[in-house]
Length: 129
Ligand code: NI
Image (cartoon, rainbow, N blue to C red; front, side, top):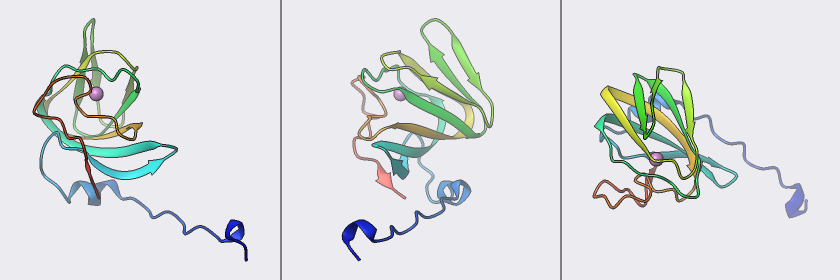
């Protein structure tokens, strides 16, 4: 069998609930899958994050549990469980969670959680679960 014909090992099922059980720290994304140069990340959030933008990356937020507000400069987007929103590249945003929320992010690999902000909350190299 040539290398081209070697069957790929099927990707594993990712159970979001199980993955969220593996960490507790807030605003610290974990990578749980990747595809086409994008990372699927999970994060637990509570409180107010920092204003930032990603000049070269659109960023998808999906609320898995709880509620999330994404403040934009001209409006606030409110997301309930099961809802998603894509922040377009270059658009300033600030996520806010009044109670702890569990969110899924989809964005290009290497996207920094704090974007262009100079912040001590940056996680340059997220852990993989
Ligand atoms: Ni962002």
